[in-house]
Length: 325
Image 1 (cartoon, rainbow, N blue to C red):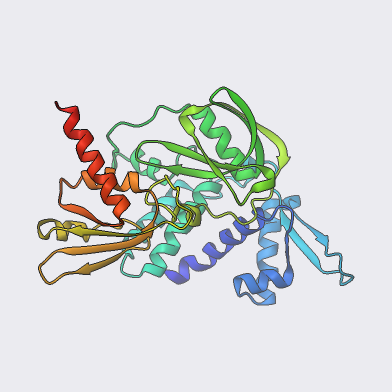
Image 2 (image 1 turned 180 degrees about the vertical axis):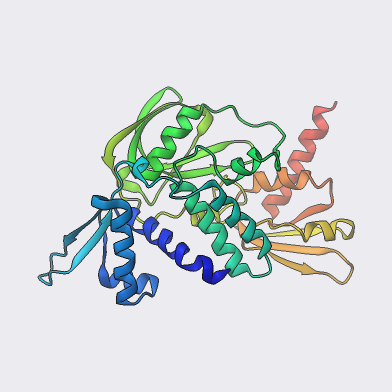
């Protein structure tokens, strides 16, 4: 499985990397070092991009007298991608392969990331892989969800994918932002965007409070922003403390086997205790959403540390009790 998908994964990783460097570009040597490719493989990959994107693959000469080239990938019209460039079946197969290979975390994680990246490039359908699976009648996602205008989501996706600035109307005020990605939380879904001058300091905008979007012709440099690295700082979408907290939960014996089936956070450690209980440790912010999630376990998982999380959990217990009086 690794051999079948590895080169495809590298190709789309290459596409994403070049698209994120709208202004800086990558030299031949930087490409070779970044991806660990030989000169022959680098040349082959550049030729593939030239075939796929034509004039979208450009280069400038580095201003150091060496006449070295700095390559850039600017896709002004993403709908010009070849027909069936990425099929719905491709995405479903990759998702399935990732689940099958859960025992090999490197392969499974790589395939999951690949499927996510392909999903952002696949513009021939408005669905993501989960939506496609749902369309086969094999998956249903019940429960309440926010009613967000599809036109607004579509325009924001276009902005994220093309690295174009967008003018949004948010809580009655218009502002120009650089959309970088999306975070889906328990209570709200968010657009992650930044001011062009401060890409490294993005902020969250509730999608339900964005009432209009206009994609502009101005491009921005995402400076290698990675939505997955950004999201790992928190348990959900909330974050406040810059360096997060050392989290510890205790799972009661009765729920230990069920808890082992979950990945609560990508940095988690699970420790099996002699009495049959389970200790879960990880580092993150987002105490409010942790408290909300712990409630769903009906007291089978209790917070141990930090003290702020214990207090948050107790406060919600108190609020719940008072609401019934």
